[in-house]
Image (cartoon, rainbow, N blue to C red):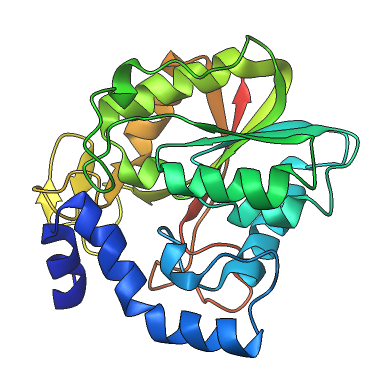
Length: 274
């Protein structure tokens, strides 16, 4: 783990968001003055997850969804941990006869999405869910007991980009059960993970030095900083939730995966209902 990342994780949640805003202030000011920021793009300092390469990253994620779970314009989809709308902005050009729902634990992201996306695309809906995460907030509602605010068998597709990589095992288990509940019988889920196989010696650009039973942590003091899950545990959790892992596509965080031609930095996992 880099020294900068280590220092970032030592900051309280509120200061992490503020620190990012301060870091990107010069370029945000420049883009605001010159008009070089897209009208569908938030300020870089407000993008609290992922890279600041907002529009291209969202388009890449849309292509991943089309490639691995055949996302179409008529699908009813759920974006778990939708952030500040990176994937949603891209999907506004695709989902016209279906619907999009997204929820997130960072309120400013939901506010931006409702103001800049929902007003233009009423079939795109965003919900603020104050769920505790030691990387972003200090809310009391815990993810391991959280119920998605949607009815059973509502969605054709559910997806999560860089969400399970910031959750603990009991929380992942709970979300997998909830995903099964809100998916239609023939529905699919695509998510990203950092995965490892105990039977192989593998290396990557991400470091997980803290070993536990079936998972590894990047930082054992900020448990949501990043987590790697064993393939064996992933399959067991999926089965217990009524799901089956049908696809694993390795990401270019791994040393042996070339970035050029790769679909995602993290590992892509597709689940079907059993």
